[in-house]
Length: 242
Image (cartoon, rainbow, N blue to C red; front, side, top):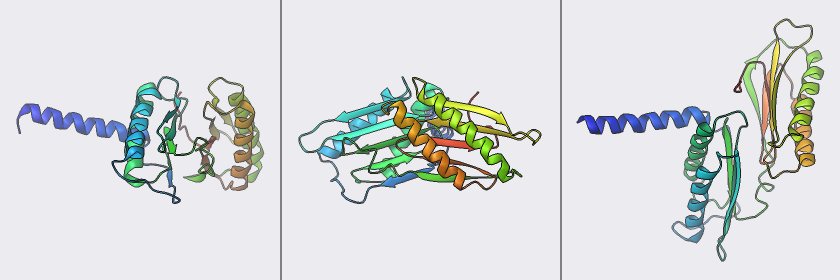
């Protein structure tokens, strides 16, 4: 293998590695609709490829992008959301990975969602595409601490505060840290976020509803809820950018 080919191979491997790192390595969750499929190399397929390409290029500027590609009977709608604390470069890499993987794991499905640690992406043939697939998914952390049930009220209050902060901010995002009272050096790290086309009131309603659901599952582990309408996460270790 000559030097030029070796350099190209190394570059490709580096890009693949960066994509895995920035995307959070593996998808957290995905959904592929089962009610309808589309045909390869037809209008919907081509429009979907245009949409995914546009999301890749246009999402990093604000961290969120909604796009539609119109066709006579083959319109496709989609959006991508990047976590509010990551860089534009990491956002673009994550959206690239999400767009690539969703075509692999949901081939010819007319609607699909995929979530990574750093971003999420969805598309559908419906303009209100987020809602048929927005039931969401709960994920428990593998990391457990000796945190008694008495600390739950503090965690819930902390996350409620983040919800108020997010719904009052222009980017519908908030993160923070608290130390659990009565437990030396026990910290909770929290993050909440909504897509930018959600109203502040609906964002707050979604987040607080998910906080209540997470509280019902509390067992000394961190947890998160991901959906098309809001994301909520708390952990007992640092997981977000400073």
